[in-house]
Amino acid sequence: MADQSIGTPEQLRDPNFTPPLHRAIPLGIQHVLAMFVSNVTPAIIISGAAGFGFGSDAGAQGFPDMTYLIQMAMLFAGIATLFQTIGMGPVGARLPVVQGTSFAFIPVMIPLVAGKGVEALPVLFGGVVIGGLFHALLGTIMPKIRFALPPLVTGLVITMIGLALVKVGIQYAAGGVPAINSPEYGSVQNWSIAMVVILVTLGLKFFTKGMLSFSAVFLGIIAGYVVALLFTDMVSVEGIVTSMSRAALFQVPTPFAYGFDITVAAVVGFCLMAFVSAVETVGDVSGVTKGGAGREATEKEIQGATFADGLGTAVAGVFGGLPNTSFSQNSGLIAMTGLMSRHVVTIGAIFLIVCGLVPKVGALIRTIPIEVLGGGVIVMFGMVVAAGVSMLSDVNWNRRNMVIFAISLSIGLGLQLEPKAAQYLPDTMRILMTSGLLPAAVISIVLNLVLPEELTEESTIEISGGLSGENKGSAES
Image 1: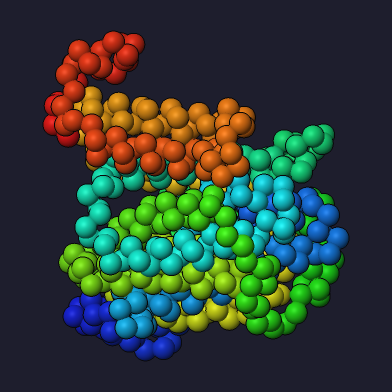
Image 2: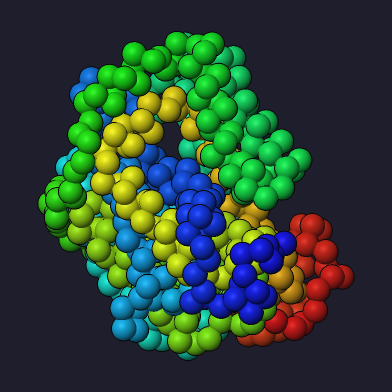
């Protein structure tokens, strides 16, 4: 509900309105808390997949590379948010849009870095930079290509992203990939800690309102962290102090800290996923304007937001940050507060930038036990799947759309579950195919564009096995 004490109804709907600082600062920080865990999680996942995260030999040195990626996630989420709220020429929606590290690219990034250590990072960041620049270019044509990305396609892709990630949540909650062959993997203690996070998150999400509800995952992880500290040997005060003491008080990011390299697999993967991220941004910007001002987003705002999305990603890649996108949690928070001020979100962005310049913040985050993070990740990635299913609920499930969905999902998810099926493909094709996400996206887009609008009952009844509801649906697209 809108807080009328902050300003008049007209002021609350005005993106250029600045509330009094004593109200604006906590409002800005709450935007950050609502997305904080989601923002740093991809850096932790990619570090673990590459082999320099939790459970690796890097632990003896305090996970310096993972800490740096966490630091860059915070820093460039803040900088990319400033691109949106303040803007530069055509760049930026000049709306209260919060940017953060995108989950969408994780299924593409994992095959690029899997088990390769920091040596894989030049290729990864080469893809981030090129993909970001391509993403920015999409701003010039986004209104013209949206027809190729209907809910059938975007819903399928978002669902595939979530399905690719839920395995990570289970592995983390059980003890992490490095512990898979150990007796502790999947222990009662590990799952108990993860369940604390899940139960606290669910309790706050459903039985509280306002900021407690929006920060449920963040607070759930804090609860799990405290329980792990008090009742287990997963983390200790000594370990926290040691981690913090190893980190500098202030650090400026280094351009191309891990080098820069370009491969076809990385560039193609990031550019194709840029389409999905761009569509997500369009939806988030529309959500902000509808929730805060009761209107549709203008074409200029959508283009500016897409420019900022891509530029923020490209700049992040130069310094060792992962791809950025707009965060949908922010839309719900604006609808709740009724405050449309972009300057409030600017304050939140500055808070993120400060955190990103202080490595001790990243050093504290890296002490979170992987089982605690697993509990939060299970909730977050499950919500990604749910978001995709929600998009698919808008699809008219006629026989044509069912066939498109069936083929795309079967091939995409099948390759994801059985990557050895593509082992004889060239390296570039193998990486792209085994992500599962990209083949599903490409197949669904192509089939949606080329298949005729009508499929007769006889054309699908033979392959339905009696389960497709032959008497349901229509010939309409």
